Length: 457
Image (tube, rainbow, N blue to C red; front, side, top):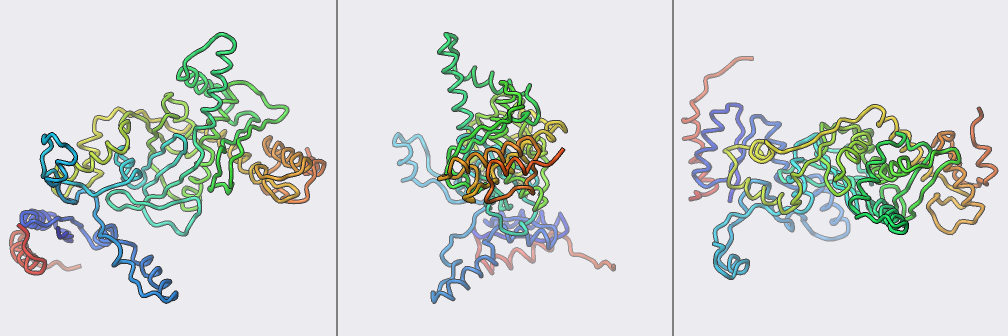
């Protein structure tokens, strides 16, 4: 199906053209000015500069290749992507109850359907999903200034640019500690189901110090590209003067689950100056109300909402995209469709970041980054391999000093630092013209388009 973009600053002209072109079988979009038209045209195509760069590189390698010729046409949300055929209906339902003719929406992967399922497709919004891994997707208002290894780029189903912060390590290490506490309860004759133990432990974190009072945890069961670690090294650190209690310990574990995500989000929020109005959080980490949600709000300094709208995940998201093809009003965008027809009565609970939690998480993450960056005589980080015992002593000593805030990242000495030397590093105490009527404009334009593109019935 051919797609027409109507560009006019007069709503009545756009409406009339939209109506007549749709009746003629065209798929139609609208823009009220040139800038909006350019944005929508770019959304519905590939990045021209990147295509040109690729073709230039292949030409230098002696290959005559035009990448655009190899790529499929781009379909955005709302466009028809075909219909269910007779053979397709029989394949899906041999009983014959499923009838052919159902409209198909453009396919989407987990990223796109997740955005729709959480109503996070408008610029300045995003969603965080926490499970075995943890990731955030943020809908951007503009292109990023440069490439960052911490970020991946995708788009919403309507073509808006999205920055993704994906961390390999999520809540698995937290889950391992829950299992340990469950085993301890079992061994003393007080067994409880895992869900109860999880909620009890997680809720205890609310009573911990906002900076975890000298405790710190790394949840790296596997390598973590964002922080440059090739393989996992789960680790718990604390200073001799720290308060080792359940509340501080569990708060440190929950902070660790969010820490790497925070590092990636800092690239967006501090370096790229990306603004966020709200984030939606979903996944098992957020099932205990008001805990991980509150800590996430502090970590990214943004209101965080949770609810049951994403319970069905990607399947629900793609079902909404299919509904959008057939049920949207003329000219209605996906964001408006979701807000007015799907999520208008959704039960969401939002938490704003508190100043105390923000200050506590900031102090925690500063020590977290500093300790992870500290290197010993071999030049390897605290989580590296093949160190001598002397090297490990020096690194742990330096990490502990950073944990207490007595060493700032700028004070780190990356090489040739013994345990004794590490201790020494501690600082001491216009005109208008007449316009034709919208109907007259449409009567002249629509036949011209039909002659150019071909009439659709």
